[in-house]
Image 1 (cartoon, helix red, strand yellow):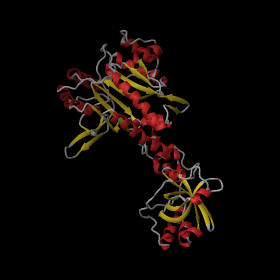
Image 2 (cartoon, rainbow, N blue to C red):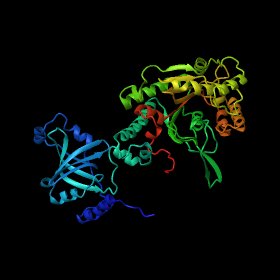
Image 3 (cartoon, rainbow, N blue to C red):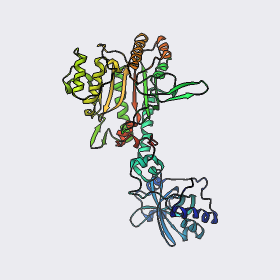
Image 4 (cartoon, rainbow, N blue to C red):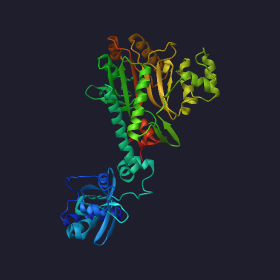
Length: 494
């Protein structure tokens, strides 16, 4: 279907011919910059016009025109690059009639390059006195109106390129996300961890409890899962002797979408030979504290109406104690499963048909009553064995050596003392298969290759996984995951 153009878009297309008449390629060529908007301003800090006349500062920048004030033979333009905006002053006396005629064809949204000398306006604004003007790219669409044209999160997520042009906050989040990942890598690399890459297509569903995306490999004529975790492959590398490994990569889970969940997201998983749950807690507390300082310059960050503080030692508390405090039920005692069923019915807590032991109820009651109140960083440990199929048992075999790190009522990280007993692991897989047969769609499958790797001997180890997107949310004060993923999964437009 042919695109219907509005009046402004028709005028902009007519200007393509005008530019060509003036000998200009509307789509430009390579342009070499010496500076950006920030360095331009940095170069005139604490200087006045007399000093800039005596010692001229010349710069070459490029960016998108965001403001225009055409005033006959002299005009102002404001151009935007990644670092911000810088003003330019252009006059026919300085650039000549030919270049000024090209400038007069410009619209807001066009991309241009300017060369000139730094000066200050009467109000003290750093400004480039343009001596050479280069047209680089014609914008055929009109940018949204600044204050009302692109504020809806749905529209901004669908048109991220416009969001980045119009909203400085969105650009800052995108840049901060990169800084978060680089800070994590720097911290771990300095501790001797090796960053690796493992396969996204997996023949076995394992490493987490989640519903998968399924795809088909034509040459092999078989289905594969898009990975729901990187865990099992990374543990094989521990068996192979790499000892300290991590992977930052995309994970895919065929589940719902809300403010905290996107079906395609980024995690870091890390495994350390000869570590355990305690060493993972110490490592992660240090990593998050370091990352917050690197990205935010402080361990105290604002999130909504709360201040989160990653500076003090993180709290450790057992899941059993939290549930007992909120419900009066002590899961360290031998609770009757029928009493738990009646309790959940009375409290309108949804139950699943595969719940055949008390551990499922402990986990559900924690989710219902406890997690939302964990605001400051808290390690919740002692998860029931039923929901921890890859974790070493505690001294009480009903529980495992596992913690989840909660911040602002949200799970941020999940850690284990890793199960390295192949006999026990096989039994856990068999229990997962039985749960799947009872209707648990998120249960793991039997991974025979992983079991064979364990047969060769995996050293005692600690492991942890964390959602990168959620950490970025906390460090950039964003309450919706779509704000920190450049191209989130979206519903079809109505």
